[in-house]
Image 1 (cartoon, one colour):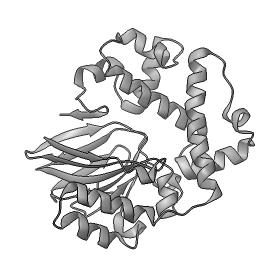
Image 2 (image 1 turned 30 degrees about the vertical axis):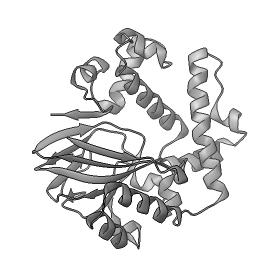
Image 3 (image 1 turned 135 degrees about the vertical axis):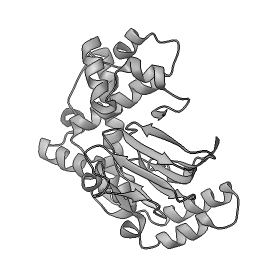
Image 4 (image 1 turned 90 degrees about the vertical axis):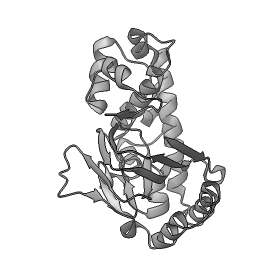
Length: 268
């Protein structure tokens, strides 16, 4: 397997990573919720993607030149003859920032690139054209920088994302406050901002972020399984297992047995 990555520092707080992954043989893998949005450019066309609760006929992603994978709250299944893809891993705030779409509209869903971005053909030409991965990644960074819709709500959303981290830290030391108390927003305003920028309610998004942090902790061999939940703010072992299964459809122990080097990516 070949993997290249580039961190676009000019897009800090919106885009995390531009990456290229190549697997020369056929296979399948399951991707667990990551809390990220991905704009994907398959360079090898025989790729199929499906998600639970979305029938393949209603929401197919097969041989598309480019597609946007929205916020997923359930495992995602992928099958391929070969896998060669360039992807842009983005924070949830990127969907409204770059494409002007409320994230709740594409929760657990896929959208063809040509629907959400008028200049997608230009991006496809660069991605499929000559040049090194680094040259392409830097071009994508510069291109996306020009697409940013700067609004006061964007800064609100970035601040809310940081507040979630504060809330999770409070759970660990038991000095718990609500997000409304920390931000000084009404419940209605908080719900609207989260639904549009993060695709879920504040409570669900907080649980998702907690799940992701827990999944990363499971990759740390110094943590015994029964200590992982407590280290990530779960009340007890049953609460830990139940919450983990909500997003992964497997127990933490089963995940640890199947996990690859990449958190959230399981090869089958």
